[in-house]
Image: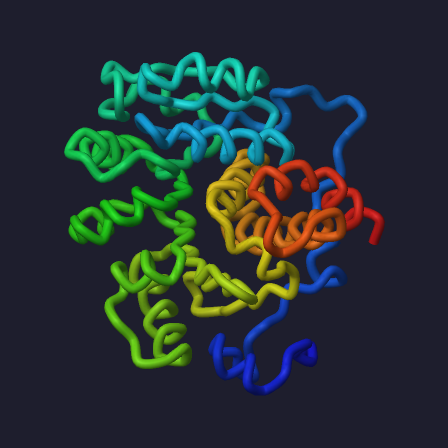
Length: 302
């Protein structure tokens, strides 16, 4: 077992205890797939990202850029019609699929769902009735593991019966507030971690506890604490970037728990590399995206 790289007061604050695992460069580097010289874009999966609403198209852009920077061969982004020009100009490498609604997502092209190797939903979609309808459709027709973030998590917490329809091994990426809405209030980090373990086991999902030393909680109750990242990453859009990274790894056929662990580590490593050229105050989510390449390169060098 690895010796924790943080003092006892930090371990107590995040809920770390003997028996938990650490995500270090030595542990994570072997998880990276090796690319064949004969590979093509179809080799690395086709991801679908359902994201954005009027005034929240930045979330869709950040997640899309991170997904493409993390190796997805193809990416389609399902967006409200108001975001078409924004996405096509901001992320020309992605394909845009416009919703029937102008300002928010509301319905999906259901026959096409089977074409995707991974689907993510949530960044910037809002909590309207239309967004809820899109989430319900997805849960009804898509049976592979999903990536659920942001407003998708809020919609699940507001409509808890939908949790029973989560495909096994889906990945949920809540920040502390979103997590509390899913599992209920907790008195301390130890109780929060215990309730998250119960939640992940009950719903057969991988559930993150985002923050300093983000925890990845697996369906079998195993817990992996991250060792990368810095306070500069506590900025708007950072979670959208993480969702894009994990979605890309899922599209490339990484198992859900591996995609979550690898994604969390790479996201934090990119933030650490970005900090070398910034300050904690000035670091932006876009800086994390632009340092994903160096993060992959550094991890692969091990």
